[in-house]
Length: 101
Image 1 (cartoon, one colour):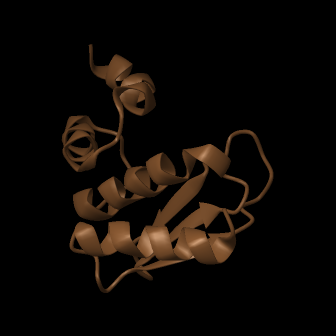
Image 2 (cartoon, rainbow, N blue to C red):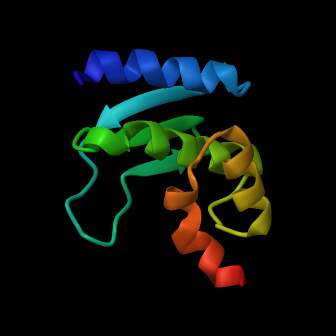
């Protein structure tokens, strides 16, 4: 997927979830294994997605949209609830849900 296609698809997801005043940025996030595929920058209303995200693009965008809707960086039960509601898959959420079992 080209960066332009990523922006177009991401824009549709942002709009679908009421984030019309947010934007999506496709960039190279620092190459460290402990860094995520995306970042929710609430201060600037930007969701940053790593250009190398590949097939995980949709889940990465939805993950960060859930942070935008929740209003914080935590992966708490409320964030999990929002992430499920907007379409994050069980496979994607499993590492976070395990924390609260």
